[in-house]
Length: 71
Image (cartoon, rainbow, N blue to C red; front, top):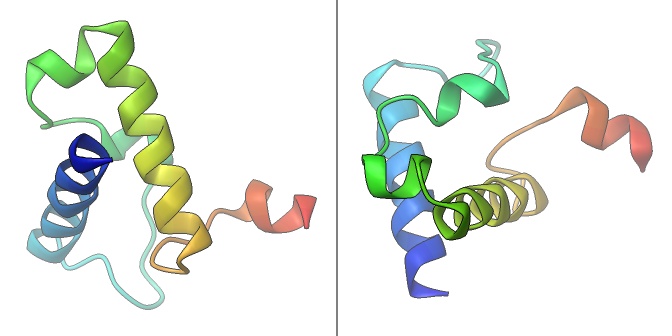
């Protein structure tokens, strides 16, 4: 859980730097760019990134059109 929290903070910080709040949008695949390579290259890291993004969507910090359509 600690690793997911770190990735969540990295994603939130990236969105804040890019000023991507409110009506602005970016693709989910672009969120992983710029994360440390040990997350991007390993299978465990990729799963951690996916879980972190899902948690941000569930917490309503990210909106995903396909996720919202599934509800």
